[in-house]
Length: 470
Image (spheres, rainbow, N blue to C red):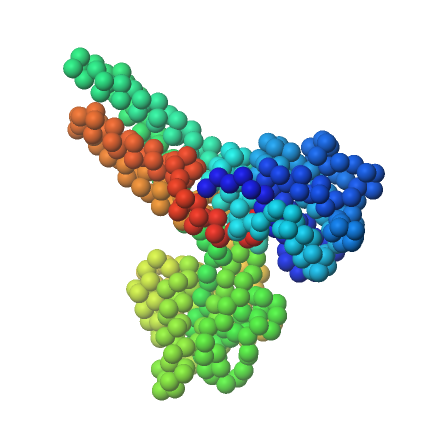
């Protein structure tokens, strides 16, 4: 996949703006840029030092396209490890297009998606997990996802995997050496130390695998389903959380017939709230489809907010039926975190709230219950704090490695399986040649994560998801 031609692309977001940055990378990048650049001080870009800035004009023959600032980064001290030029021009889309078309005529070609970062990987400036973190950093939209991407891009995850791989590789070499002296029946690898190493690797792998449960939802937003009977205030709650009129609110039961989703950042963590159709028996075909979708969204959600009308609970004696509905959800989705949200609490006295708490308590266990008034926005902050408690942010605060990438997660699972096979082989005195095969497979899985083992198809799949110009 290594190519020596020069590529060009817009490095800033497409569209008009104050300025735009056009990036060129390749062996002839500086020469090509010099052929269209006229310095105000008559400088030749090919003779200038790396990491310098130069003011001048981009010229198409004798036609001036724009006044620009040109940045020079010479190999290997550039992002891609190649000669790189960045042209800062005015942000007119016309100017951008004219300069890029001129550079294409001078010998550049348009960069593929992620090709600048791909070249950085191929030239040893980044390993594969760091390169993937670049895409995560660009797409991060909250503090937590940004922190995880930065930690991975700085090499925290790579260093942890590389250290494990190096230690395992050392023992693998000793095992291979034993095979060369099989007839002498000697052991070069200390089996006790090897077993301790495998236990340590297994512990780290399990910790990284467990972190994916947190990392994946932080990266993609924690899905929260708002469910309950019609007209209990689900849409009003969504609007209160988002602090805008996102969902239609009406006194007519069954107004929400489809799911409505929106995102909100709370305490640096992204939450994806889903307002669902009210759950009830209905003969309305369209509404029944919405109710079916409600249960689909409950299945997808990590947290379920079961909203009830506190006033109607007491007036209509619905407490028993509420307990039955909650038990149904718990039985169908036993792993779901369920919060009971009692709405219209401004109409309830402390004594009435106490009655509801007592009635909802089963087997000396009281479910987490929060009293709010979605309309008056009372208790909404308490709800947000409770939602944050569902996220294990301890690892974030301690700057521990958190896995967010499904590809990494899959390789970690396979590596753990191989390590456990090696442990079993040691404990059952399996022959060294068979143990060596399992070690090699574990090393292969580690290598897939960092890119020490890669192929064109894998790299193509990864960098195809990048934006053009990065």
